[in-house]
Image (cartoon, rainbow, N blue to C red; front, top):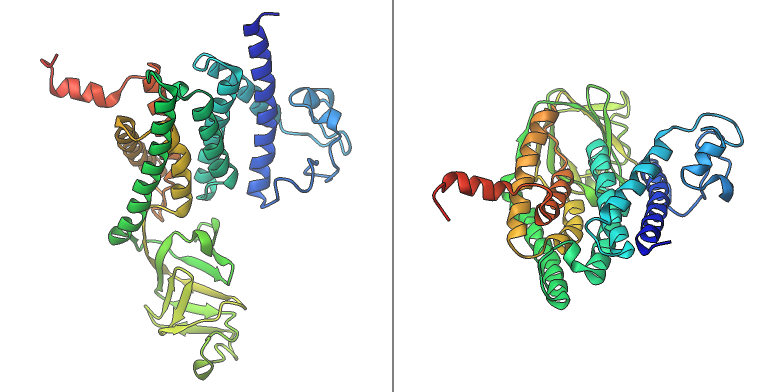
Length: 378
C-alpha cells in the first residue's frame, strides 16, 4: 500500500466519522441536548444504538435505513452527510500535504457548513462551530500554516501571522460590535407575541414563526411594543415593593399605552418601572419598534477562528469586502418582514473564498475590479 493510498483511506475514514459527529451535533444543538449525554439513540424509540450499528455509512446500510429496534425509517441524509464529509476531507488532501492537515481543514470547512445552516434556520451559531472552528484552525496553523496561507516561506512567521490575524480580526469585530450600537437598525413593520422571563425572550410572529433568544445572546438593543399593547400573566411584576401592582387581577391582562413597555437587554419596564421576570409575562402588540445592532456575541466569538485562517493582511480586507457583498445578496434573497439577517454565514463563506483565492481555485474579485478600473496598469 502506497503512502498516498494510505492517506486517502485514513482521511476518508476520519471524514466519515466526523460526518457522523456533525449529524449528532446538529440534532442535539437543535433540540438543546448535551453533546455527551445521552449516548447515540433512535429519535423515535430512544433506544441506544449499539456500536456495530453506529459505524458511519455501513451502519445505515446494515439496518436497511431503519432503526434496528423499532424499524422506523432513518433519513438518508445521515449517510449522505457522512459520505459527503468523507469526500470533502479527501479533497482537502489536494491542498494539504498530510492527512493531519487535510483533516483539520476538512473539519473547519464542515463546521462552517453546519454553522451556516444552523444560523440561517435559528439565528444563532452553535457552540460546536464556534469552539471547534477555533480549535481546528489553531491546529491547522500549528501543523501546516501554508494550507491556509500558501506562499509564506517560514513556518514560524506564518504561525505568528495567523495568531496575530486571529487577535486582530477579533478586536476589529469587537470594535464593530460596539460601534454598531450608534447605528441601530430600526424596523416597525411586524408584531406578535413575546413571552418574557428570566431565561430570555420567546417571540411568536403573526405568521406563526417562533424564535427564542436567551438573555446572554439577546441581539436586540431595545424593543418597544406599539399599537393595542396588552400585558398578560403579570404576577408580582414590579421589583420595587412600593410600585407593586396586581396587574390584570380581574381580567388577566392590562392594556397599556404606546411606549409604555420597553425591553432593553435584560431589563424590562412598564411605565418606566422595572419588572421582576421571575414569574414571566406575555406581551402582545400590533407592531414592535425594534432597535438593534447587526452583530451578536456569537459573531465575535467566531472571529477568532476566522482570523487565524485569514491573517492580519490583505486577506482581512478581502474577507470584509466579500462578506459585505454576500450579506447584501443574502438579505435581498431572504426579504424577511422583520429584517433579521444572520451575519455568520457571510463571514464563513467569505473566509472559505479567501483561502480558495490564495490557492488559485477561485478568481480574486478585488483584483479583477482593480484591473477593470486600471486597464493599462502593469
